[in-house]
Amino acid sequence: QVQLVESGGGFVQAGDSLRLSCAASGRTFSNYAMGWFRQAPGKEREFVAAISASGGTTSYADSMKGRFTISRDNAKNMVSLQMNSLKPEDTAVYYCAADRSRSPHSSRWLYDYWGQGTQVTVSS
Image 1 (spheres, rainbow, N blue to C red):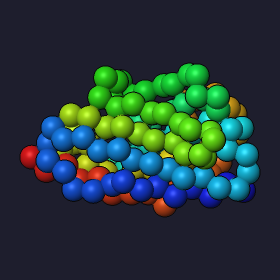
Image 2 (spheres, rainbow, N blue to C red):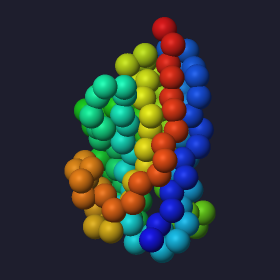
Image 3 (cartoon, helix red, strand yellow):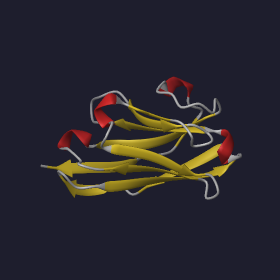
């Protein structure tokens, strides 16, 4: 079992930056690939970014490339999402997730553990 707790969400203006963090506890964090997903009201949960268990490989949704950066610190059991140049359409609840496959991917159905989410609201 892996417990995930997100933090860092908030209310920002368009163009601002925000850094989300996800603290993990339980099983060995470095054995899991980690992903960030988001869900806006009335929409399906969508892939944002993922990082391999070692941290050496990352994957991004096309609309986030160049604006978002995922990273992890296995010594601290932490994964982060740096979000720059935020837009109103980035408004959503952001979730982190853990996958035993070790490789980053965008298939949300394959992630084993999920956090409760953190709200990000971007005002125009």
